[in-house]
Length: 448
Image (cartoon, rainbow, N blue to C red; front, side, top):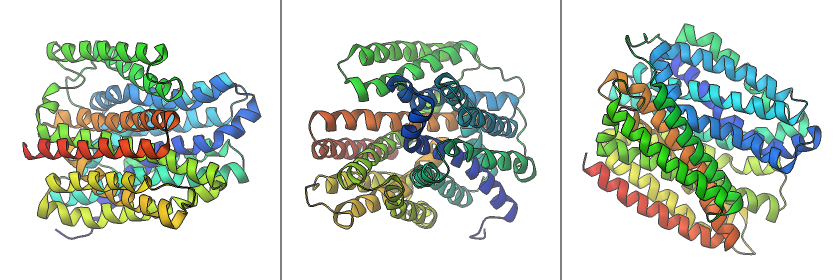
């Protein structure tokens, strides 16, 4: 097979990656835009926090349901509906004149993102069926997510400073509309699976359990792990997800076929995704704090500081991974990525009063970028590739759920540790957690 992707498939990949991009950009840009939005429409401290939580909680809660909905209505159709809905809800959010309107728009954004995200990933895995071609496609697709997270800081700072906070929401609209127009032309349709029905009790249990989990993690970052606002939702989440797992063994058409979790390699790949997102978003919190609050950099300059991360992440994902997977396989590539991410935390423990961007922040960003670039496409490919075509969407939704849980877990755990002790102590614990995860993942992958 040629090294380059076939032109039609290349266009399909560009469209699907653009769909993925809007979900990544949105979260990071709103972090930058929040102070301006707070002043403009009179957000209280609680409402300001819910502008972020409403999106992440809804997205995390409904990913599994969104994945199965793609099987019912067709994945290409689910993608188009998802991006159009995201565009409309982004316009509503950006036009908000009151806190309730903004939060409602953010909830709607999360719901439509939960529909489009698993549809986009599952379409990548069904469009690119040959192993080498799929590895290359997933490398591009996965790097889009992490590049979008980092680029969101740059774009958020520029838009907020130049045009106003509302444009951090409006900017997704032309991207989403372009994806909606090009998807029917560039992406081959996948027929809905006949006879598939949505497991409504499963949707209620899974969505409630995941929403409770994401909410608990958000509360832990603010109130601490011993607070009732954290313990209560965590306990509720454990009960709801346990009942959900039991229900999936009884229902004829489960929302999440538990056979997906029968593969040690797939479990290991999802654990690697959780661990990497835990580390990335936790470290992004530390680095943003260091650059903006300690070094005194403005938002736009802080965003530009993350560009080396984007560059090495894309290079590792698109150039190293496709060449490495065929030779040494994901059993080596995935744990190696986690080890490099853990090394980034080790470097950050050297933080001191005289720490500079070239001497500390840049090496950390390079290690995280290379580690994430190696890990994400390899993990996503391992986790989302299934033999049974009807399991493609649930497996894809599970990967995105792992990403979302990890992204919520990192700032909650490491942010709490940093607040109680120091960022250096939190980084040391982060290194321990990531290195331990690398060992467990390596064992699981070798059992496959």
